[in-house]
Length: 304
Image 1 (cartoon, one colour):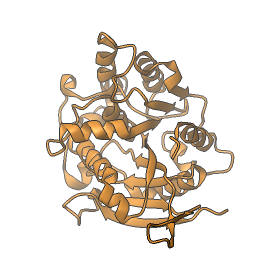
Image 2 (image 1 turned 120 degrees about the horizontal axis):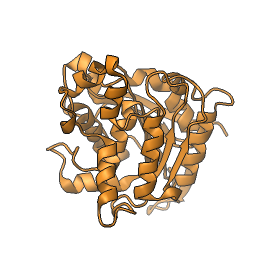
Image 3 (image 1 turned 180 degrees about the horizontal axis):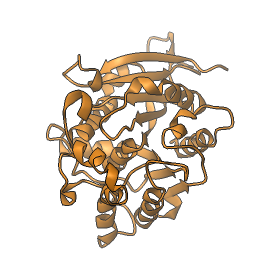
């Protein structure tokens, strides 16, 4: 049966509804609706709960736009039998903003997607929520999963805990998790990181690897706290990546296993393609990355 999608573009998730960088695209999977009887004894369609995959693009917080990732959304919606949201966030080049604005925007989008009234308006019910991030999109997805320190002031602690608890899986593509090590390795490109972060003082940077180190050093560091003990990870990195070295992912994977357990973390560095190619190739025939993501999503999905 062909997959049916209701696509709504440029949905504002912020009060600044006219800024295209504060909007998202929704790909609501309307396939396979069941038929249930209402209290009025009339037959009405009832959409089943499906996974929600939220794609966060990369671009070193300077470039990138959701409009370039329509094919990813369509592929994931069809292959994974899921709803998909592709979010924009403000950037250094377009909005002249610095860290932590980028991750605050992402969190606001995630909170918007979690709100029951928005799900009712756009008619999508969710069984499982997963974040899919590429490059610094993976950086932000990871940070949201491992710490509450990135919480915006206008998002309550309870709302942030609920958000983190709702996330069941993280898919990271060609991610950057140790920014301090990255600027040391690629000194000629350091400004591409320090400019959007707004400082060269690495001690102030919010980096996934630092928070994982802290978690591992806790008394019960062998397992994650109860907020995210269910969390599953898929880490993908091609050795052909010309912008980010694979050690970013291999070292991060070992940290994740130390905190969440080996069974919670799946990692592949035997994929092919340059930094951007791994995203562009999603959906192509026999694309290994598409197959790995699909298999992972289907293995994580909670029963509806």
